[in-house]
Image (cartoon, rainbow, N blue to C red):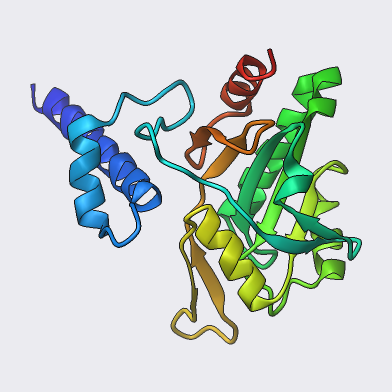
Length: 217
């Protein structure tokens, strides 16, 4: 009985954390995370397979202007016409970024010919260090189809606001350089630029592929 109770408590804690993360992303203009959290608890639908379903009316994505790893200007209009997998991180990231980009590369391989209908996008939250050249070197480690986007501090901040991405510069005790604390969801955007699914960190490539294929019809 004790073991069953512990498992039940763990499940509740994980569910609570997932809704809290969604609350940060789904908050409305001027709304605090706590208020958003309470609203989600009241009317959020259950999670979908591999993703987080946000309340109807929640809008993610929007106008941005960045440059890719080849120095070409990219705006929100360039993401139209295909599905997009969008992830925010930074090239000096020691853990979640390489893990999620590796999964993104596996997704593209698993899609086979259907991969032509999907754009994998990696947007930096560390424009001070992540130059186009650095982005080109980094995304090339994971898959040739991944586009790396960077820009000025202001341009990156505008893109992060559009997707409601949290990021903050932190220097761990004893460290000689800074890291970036950031939210780590992967966004599946539709051909029209609307959000189709929101994947938590650690979601398997198989689950992501299933969600992508469900949106290719």
